[in-house]
Length: 422
Image (cartoon, rainbow, N blue to C red):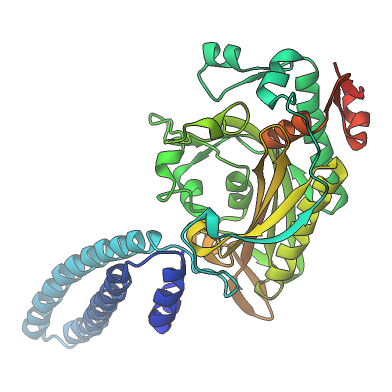
């Protein structure tokens, strides 16, 4: 969340930048500032009372030593009244602080200065377009038909066993999944990331820490009895490793990578855009996460962007990179690059990665800090999909279909053990 001191000192700037994200709730910002003033006044009253009670306690002791019991007892009565008041003030302070924190959780991160205003994805800025769009004839099949033809993904069986959005991968389809995961992990490790295999469930503190709660509550699965959430991305458990941690400056950057299954309700998703692998409730993804010094986080963002682009080049997929406008930017992100690959049979672009800098927004929620030169300050957090599998598989199947079968990119053959799906 945004730092309270930053909101107080830069109220107009905060309102201006949040408007770029189409957030126009100025009343919330005013309520936060007003409630914080009330918190300060309550805290001062409590501190003054505690100081007065401490002074009186010393005075009572002195009077008793001097044998002036009547005066001492009179002061003790005032002390008792102060204790009662202090209990009420402490209770009020706790309520105010909790309410203030809840209000702060509802304020999005402010966008980076390079982010342009816009309503949604139609206003995103295309920065790069690489690779040759494959030429396909009218007989080219979409990936869900190819999956059925070659018996590599079974959507009907997934619907039978679980429900829509939970496919079975089988045979060479399962091997292709495993190949992509291994390839993405190996590439990240070669780039200096440490591999983790995280839990697939997190507690509420972790979901709040990275900003999934309260913003994405309706999009997450929830195990009510145990108050656990199946993760929507490995970003959540990996970043929360450092919740309530103070790193040393020379430990930065922290570079972690993790493969995990991801779970998203995708409430409200329907229509042709959800066919096949286009939108799933369970899918696999390799995620890269970095914890970085604030002065170097945007340099790191470019490095992470280049890493994702390098994977797509090696897979031979045509792709483009977009800088998201304010209206399409996530609640927690300051700047996001989206990657899309071209799906030949569907003749459309499919998102396969988002690479984002959250600056100190998540770190402030998690109390993730680092210490250098005697000063402790909030770190910056970044993450990116490197990459999400379903739409990569969709594009690989559609773009590489031939009369003999589906050709496997050369870089994956050592992982799959075969060159063609036939």
